Image (tube, rainbow, N blue to C red; front, side, top):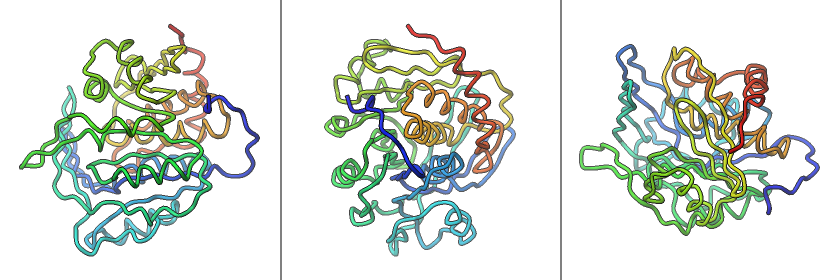
Amino acid sequence: MRLFIVENRIGLVKLLVVGHITIDHIISPTLDLVSLGGPPSYAGLMAKRLGADVDAATKVGLDFPEHYTLFLTRYINILKPAVSQKKPTTRFQIQQYSSGRRLKLISRCEDIEEDQIQTKNYDVCILNPVAGEVSKEVAAVARSIAKYLFLDPQGFLRRFDSQGFCTLSDMDKELLREVDVLKVDYEEMRSLTRLSDPKQALNELHNLGPEVVILTSHSGYVTLSTGKKIYRIPIPTVNVIGEMTGAGDILAGAFAVSFIQNMDLLRAICVGVSAATLAIRGVGISKIPTREEVSELAERILSGVESC
């Protein structure tokens, strides 16, 4: 079992994020904000803050603001060619409600290209499309150049109607065969398995390929399943000052870096839950917490983990 082989790690964690950088218009009863977004921004910057060397395979349009480019390239390496001459940057309108959110695709950039990914020495790849911008071929390249593959399947599951509104459907499950860690929420779990019972669904997801499955939730606890054991990771109660956009990506970035640094799944998921919990205090890209904050809260979370 690949995930439980302990290796001596020297130097920085080398991490690749594959997915579109986005511009998000976030609307809630108390907020109207246009923000930099997408997995390379949230997962990439969180990983960088925890000590990783981060590359991003992504695409933006000619409309992408220069100040966003200057900000991102201070921290992560955006692999070329990243600028589309044909299509605008991927943009979402995200309507936040107390019971959830509604996602509307405003524009979509072109697909990520295979030749953007040339380095072959990544410790981990976070494969996280947002709107179907990753082909089978790019996914295969991502698998081949990293020791571990972490998948958030949201962009493979999303379908957008003629007005841009999002629903979830199924995906090509062959992609799951080479995945080491899969992160899903309850809706994504049901879309992939057609099952509502978490234990049955987790077993089915393991049968599809992933050794480790993370089942997220906005309240209560996050579930970590190894196929042999299931753990409940408590989510600390905090005041939700900001909004939830990007919290899952932040969890992914924090988990991936901690796992490579320590080869400890339980500690890694506690670090991920800590980072995501702290993130909801802020808005937009400013929500990414500090390394010290994440570490302190992760220790508290770790002490409350239960196996079931």
